[in-house]
Image 1 (cartoon, rainbow, N blue to C red):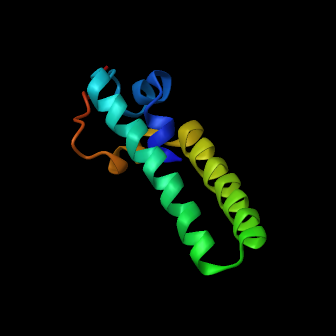
Image 2 (cartoon, helix red, strand yellow):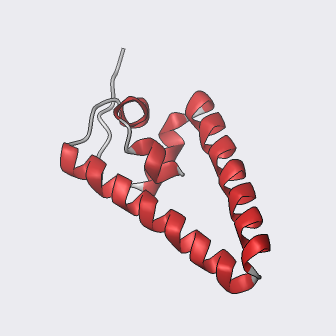
Length: 92
């Protein structure tokens, strides 16, 4: 969920104080999508389908909440999810 959030221009601006390139945003979107599918596959591998879907949705809700709180409190903490994107420090 963090990669998907950082692939949005508004949240990327919050985290890095600048807008990453469109290629970097596409990579973040791709990573987020692959991570969601991987999480779903792991849930399906751990339990039967009906329970796996429930657990996956609950995990998505928890991850979304954690990312939302992080973005509202300390958005720069999400930089660790994409260390190849450099931050531009703004000094007052």
